[in-house]
Amino acid sequence: MKAHLVFIFRYVVIGLALGFLYLMFFSPNRNQIATPTTPFSYASAIDKINPSVVSIYTQSIERNEHSSSGISPQSPYITKNYLGSGVIVSSSGHIVTNNHVIKDASRVLVYLWNSQIFEASFVGNDTLTDLAVIKINSANLTPAEFADSDRVNTGDVVLAVGNPFGLNQSASLGIVSATGRRGLTESQLENFIQTDAAINLGNSGGALINPLGEVVGISTASYTQIGADGINFAIPSNTTVQIINAIIEYGRVIRGWLGIGFVPPAGHIIYGIPKPEQGIVISRVSNGGPAHKQGLKTLDVITHFNDKPINSFDEYKQLLLSHTIGDQIKLKGYNKSGPFEKTLITELPPQPSEFVP
Figure 1: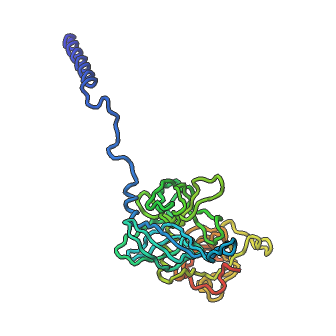
Figure 2: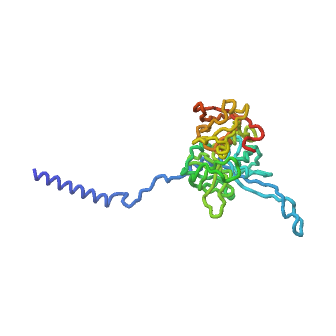
Figure 3: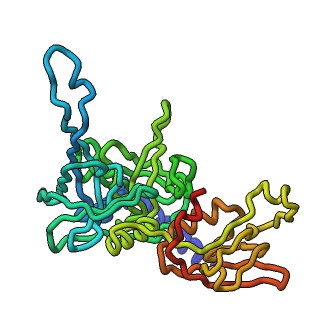
């Protein structure tokens, strides 16, 4: 029995030794480093969005401030050229861009990804969001796909595609640095996506996309303070789509009205009205307005706007300003009788607007 065990052990050892020698001298991969067969790339996203991103060149006639100075008289007007970007939103030629790109332009030229050039006509603009829609006479264009910007989170990968410094169809990579940025301009409606993807002169109006090639925002501005680097902003896609639809349908944006006023922060002290832990207190309900029709009353507390919690008038204003006439708004809150949920239909606001003193 012992002889059998010795025999088996001897051949096991010999087999292991032969296997080791084979791996050392005959393995075809012994000197190779494993590399992925397909390197990670965003090329498919760029290929998808490229036909939908355009370069925009504008001309404007401006007064020459130095026309009366010097020995030789100069022309009282001069022509200035600007550049920007845009995103095709319909196969029939509608293009969204920043309002500041085409503002005061006497001529707007659109350069497509396939090198075709068209002169654009003005459709409408919205100064509150700095968005505008122009149109070219071309068929069979490729409109961009827009993603739900409410699903964008800090840390998401994004790419900015546009026409920086006239380098059309340029792409830069970054992440979403923050969402819901406000207080950057004098506009009442701000809800910017912040990104470190490079947005330079000429990128304004271009696409901020996700790795699937879907638009999550429209590039609009960079933080220009000395020393700032990688602080750039885009208008969320959800806001952009609402503005585009309104401009194409009406030629302008008419924001909806609910006919509600709210107690300001100081009003709780002045009038002795208890400040709720959550929500804002109604101080005024316009007779015949949407809120009045649904039975809302003064001192009712509103806690949610379309299921989003609100705790200040500024939050309410930001949400309402993104809606046009005829939109359904769901308000949740409570009063002395208990909790309530009301569905209101926005209407044409009376003049002056409820947001203008």
